[in-house]
Amino acid sequence: MPKKISVITSPTGAVIRDILTVIDRRFPDIHIEIIPVKVQGDTAAKEIVSAIELLNRRKDADVAILARGGGSLEDLQAFNSEKVARAIFASEIPMISAVGHETDFTIADFTADLRAPTPSAAAEMAVPLKHELAGKCTRLSTALKNCFYRYMEHRRKRLKEISGKLLHPMKRIQQLGLKNDELSQRLIRVFVGSIRRKREDLSWRVGRLQSLSPLAILARGYSITRTVPEHIAVSDADAVSLGQQLEITLAKGSLLCRAEGKKNGDR
Image 1 (cartoon, helix red, strand yellow):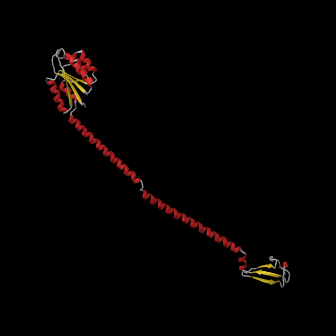
Image 2: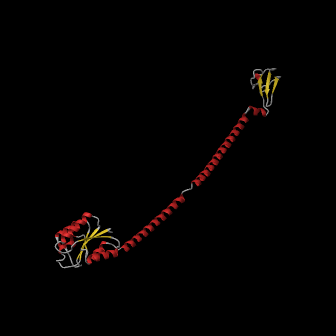
Image 3: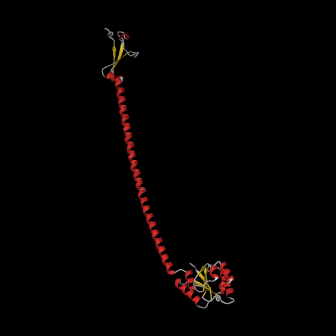
C-alpha cells in the first residue's frame, strides 16, 4: 500500500490525466507527485535520468511510474537509451515502466521492476481498490472479534469448570470444623472407654486383694491369736503355756484372754 506515488512523465497530454483518473477512482486522496520531464527529443533521456536520480536522493516515494503514450520507434528512443536503462536498474525506488501501447516494448521495460502495458494499467498496478481493502479490513475485524469472543467464551467455561472444583474458604473452614468436632468426639470416646476399662480392671484387682486380705478372712469368723506382750502370732498350741496371756484379734475389735487349757492336733 503506497503512501506516495511519483509519476515521471510529461506534465501535458493524456497520459498524466489517465493515470490521475485511474488512481483517484481506485484510491482517492492518495499522495501523487508529478516529476515533469520531456519524453521525446534529444534531451529527453537526460531529463529522465535526472528525475530518477532526484527521486532516489529524496527517498520519500514508495513507487514510481515512468510513463508516456504510444509513438513510433524514434519517439520512444529515449526509453531505449543505455543511460535511462542503467538509471532505472540502479533505482532504489521500485519502478513501473508504462511506455507506449500494449504492443510496444522498450529496454526500460526490461530493467524496471514491473512492466505495465499502458499508463492506465500502471496506475491500476500501483494502488489497490480502496473499497476492496475496506471490505477486507471489515472481514478481518469481524473475524478477529469472533475469534476473540470464542476465546473469551472458552476461557469463561474453563474458569467456571475450575471454580466448580474449588471450595469457598468459609465452606472449607466449616468442613474442617466438622472434621475437628468428629475427631474430638472420637478422642473423647476412646479416652472414656480407656478410663472405663482401667476402672474395671482396678475394681477387679481391688476385689482380688480384698478377697486375699486378712481382714476379709477375719470377717468370715476367723481370728488371729498373738502372745502378750511379744505379739507373736500363735499357730501351734505347744507354743503357748497354761495361764499365758493371749490377744485375739477379731474382724471387729480384739480380746485379751488367758490360756486355761490346750490340746494338740491329735488330741
